[in-house]
Image 1 (cartoon, rainbow over the protein chains, first blue to last red):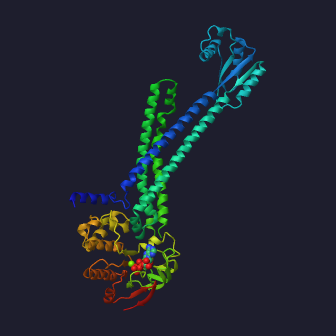
Image 2 (image 1 turned 90 degrees about the vertical axis):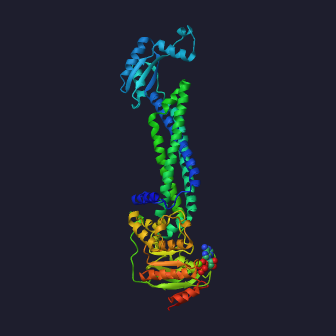
Image 3 (image 1 turned 135 degrees about the vertical axis):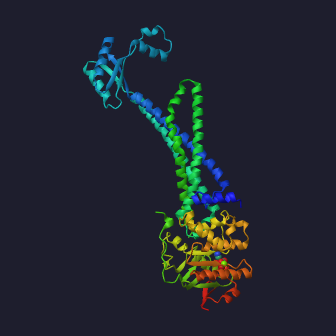
Length: 305
Length: 236
Ligand SMILES: Nc1ncnc2c1ncn2[C@@H]1O[C@H](COP(=O)(O)OP(=O)(O)O)[C@@H](O)[C@H]1O
Ligand SMILES: [Mg+2]
């Protein structure tokens, strides 16, 4: 024996870090499992990020919609009347601002949708609109604005955009649901593969498990030996998976912003603060891995007397 | 609380092993043991003999708790094994050292690490057991082979490691299944001497063997097992 190695072994043993694993891993079993777990973790991160983007998009859109209403004034409808209606609206508690839409802006809006109608537009009767800013927390504002306008002698329609926000909430709800189902399915699949692998690992080391058992090891001791290993495996695989997912997202966003049109919005939907999903992933993977290994080990041990 | 450091089973004055009308069958097969009653007193030295297939190994497996009786009652250290919880069995096992017929050393662990197992399962750390392990390995003449893997040892050396692992935890009961089965008669006699020496220090010893000659020369109580029954318990 090499005296230097011998000395090293003694020092390590003394420090308690060198105690050889009683149930060491079989490399041929560990590698494919690590790859599978890393891939599942990467997919989990992507699902998480997509769910997060869905949340954020829905939040942004609905809060934009909730903090704005549009009032369509039908009668009377001169410029003067419109200014008076705006004053009435502004007086309603919960309203933060109310601006009549000028003919020019209404025309611009119409033009941007209906393209070049040209001089014809001047002949058209442009709708008389008031853009109202509201506190999104205020309740029953729509009814109160309508009431005040009626009292002031206006015939008007208040639109609180609830049609659209309902739609957005439904759509984003479905997306979030998909992402959550995907996450749960991935966690389940990862857990099942690890439980399967832990069982196989115990089977490979059956002789060692039996000897530990016969010299008086409690189930918890043997299970902990297995668990410690799978905790490490889960963490390392999770780290690799999260790194891959992070690179994919950064790369994807780069490609999207190079495209430069309206799609660039994608860049806003995933933000730097979402990195917590990637940081959390290895921890969750390690915990799930350790739990699955623990359960598998306890079940296998129950087969022994 | 760390389950590895639960209170040990206390020593009592009663018999160390007590089989009362014990039966055991592997699955649905014919019973390997039918109706076994025997008592081992503390500090005794016993042989268990009988032809091959008579049930010696099965009896010992019940004694070291690798199997549980399917009938009757078994008491170890005054604890009724059938009524004991799953948490108690490991504590009983820690009072028992076993030399297996085929040694059962763990091939991926060094000689030193193989001997560390009984301590590590009790939750003890390196500083607590290193000296005991090294001392015992010197005593069995393997002080220079502590960091060797079992496969690099001769059969005789492996057997000494197996015996060292069985006694390193200072068991009250030492069980050996056919310890002379794989060694020449001279080595066999030396092994028996080693067991006698351990017995003098107070360890109760049970040795299963089909070697009638060995048993005759020893002059100690012998349990003879045949057709799944202990037919004779004889004092010298
Ligand atoms: N694991 C087992 N499964 C089924 N039958 C077994 C098993 N081990 C032993 N037996 C049977 O039990 C009987 C007793 O065997 P054993 O206790 O090994 O006898 P001995 O040690 O005296 O040679 C034999 O008939 C043997 O075939
Ligand atoms: Mg046998």
